Structures are given as C-alpha cells and as structure tokens.
Image (tube, rainbow, N blue to C red):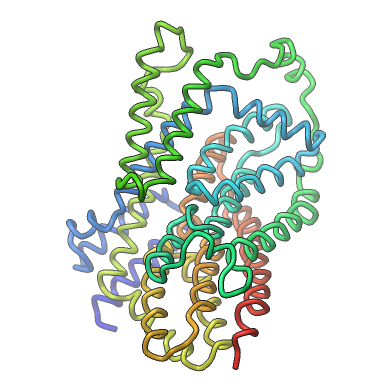
Length: 448
C-alpha cells in the first residue's frame, strides 16, 4: 500500500472507532474524519462533496418531513393499539410483531423511512407501559435493514445487482430453478425474530411491563379517538402513498428518487398550508416541522458517504476486492465462504454500497473470463453485505436514526454494551442461518 492509502485507511479506522464508541458526538467524529482525509490529500474538498449521494440525502429529508406529518395524524397510535390488542398486552410479542412488520415493509420502502414510520407506534405504547424505547426502536432498525435485499425495490444493493447482472424482479423470488433472495431471507428472518422473542425479549424488562392504569383511564376518557381529523389524515396518507408509488415507478417516470421524494413532500406541504386555516388543521407551522427533522443524522449519513468515498478514491476498496480473487478461483465452496464471511465484518464498519458495487463488478468480470457460475457469489455478497451491516451504526445508518430517536424519547444514552447486546446476536444468528441456506441451495447443487 502507498503512504496515502495507509494514511486514509488509518483515518477511516480511527473515525469508525470513535463513531462506534461514541466518546464524542458521532456527527463531530465523522465530520472530523472527512476533514482529516481532505487534509492529507486522500481526496479534495470538491471530491468529498461529490462523493455524498445527495439523491439519498434528499430522500431522507423529504420522507422525514412527510413522516413528521404522518405522526400527527393519529394513525400510528391507532396501529399501536390494534397491534397491542392482537398481542393481548404482551409487550415482548408487540415489539416482535412491530419488528417483523418493519422487515416486510422494507422490501418496498427505504429502511430509514420504515424506522421513521414505525417509531411513533412504539412511542405511543411506551407511554402506556413505561418501558425504555431505545431497544425496541433499535430492533425495528435491525429488522428494517434485513429484508431490503429480498426484492428489487427495497434497497440499493439489489438495484446494483440488477444493473450489473441484469436480474429482474422475479429473479429475486426464483432463479436458476431454485428459490432465491425472497424465500431464503424470509425463512432466515422469521427464525431470527422467533429467537429474539423467546430468548431475548421474553427474558428482558419487556416481559414484566404492566399497563399504567391511570394514564389508560385518562386516555379512555377521550373515547380513544386517535384519528381526530380524518380529512388531515387522508391528505397525509394520500401524499405519502403517492410519493412511495412515484418512487416505486421511478424508471417509468424517468426522475431521480430524491426529486420524486422532494416533489411529494413539497406538494404535501403546499396542500396542508393552503387548507390549514379553511379546514382548521391542528398542525404546527412548517418551520416547526422542519426543526423536528434529525439534522444531525442527515449530517452523519452525508459524512459516511464522504468517508467511504475517500476509500474509493484511493482505490482501497479495489484492493480488498483484489485480495478475494484468488480465493474465488479456488472453487465454489471456498470462494463463496470467503466472500460471505469477509464481507460481513467489513460492511459492519463501512457503508456497504460502494464495497458491494466494487465486488459485483469483480465477480462479473471473473465470470466472463473464467466461466465460473457467478450467482452463488452474487447472492452471498448481497446477503452478507446486508446482514453484516447491522453490526454498528457506521454500517447501517438506519440504526443511527433508530438510536437517535430512541435516546431522544428516553432522555438518556444507550450504552455500547446494550447496543451490542442486540446487534451482535442479531447479526451472528442471521448470518449463520442464511449461510446454511445458501450452501444447501446455492453452493452444493452447483459443485462439480
């Protein structure tokens, strides 16, 4: 490695350590890391700016604003009560069900958006039962980051796989005469959620939560009318659904996702502002709604893009991919194992999109030059890249958003030990189960 590459890698590693340990503010640590990379010449300030995916930033800001209005419709509280009634006051089951819902919704919607949508539901039930919100919100974050690769729409890695390999929507359900991403990830996901319910949540404070009778009685006096202004709720839900539909059909519309999300948010704000006085909507001014956006999380996400951009600009990601080539050439069983188990810890510290895209091209080129069956490698890469990213907030920005919202609701910090107490078993268990399915379905049948 050249001196500039070593220096860039060291700065990245130190920054990630500070982000994970949270001894200083995570946003400050990430920004200082970017400044340090620029100072040593790892990239210029212009390159750092262009490395940020501003399309994604616009999606986050726009949907966060829409989610703010959604949280004021009363629908989250209604959904919370319905789910709570189904779980019959079993908070451990309630948290598991909300988490499971997050995973399946994230097959169609960005994982950060899913956290923003479902967090108010947990907050509402927390007020009634008095449990700490951060753990359940983190579980939602973990689940929302799980199923994004199950179908083509949910996350960037499957879309990159489509771009590199040409696989279409139904290829994520059934490919090469066997079940592919949807079935394997769904089976893994259900087993992981069942494990957390029986062996973690039922043994935690959630299992002993009791209803605050006084608060419940006060709420009962209000006749439990959660959706107090149905016209406002209809407008917000319509705006949200139209925005999501627009994002789902982005290829037909021909616009970037960020533009579609921004347009949806802008039109929703316009309609609300025009009708607020005539229809007497009980909603704060736009300035207040904008202030509720977690701008620190936006800055953190942007800094992560720039940090990974430094690794990309100095060709460090290409070097990592190059180190894997000899193992891939040794055979299917060894190659897929190395790609899978090397990828998982890397993406736990590196925002995984750039790494996955780099390795996708490496695998494609090897397939063209050596004739190897690329699909076991493709699937192993995107699955490990998604599941492994749940290890830290550096790997999965959705976890950072969940952690920030949970700590704000609880009014106290969530320790690193508590965080890893959720993320480590979740990641390890999901990786092991998924790997077993991958070997049985996608490796052994293709071995010569």
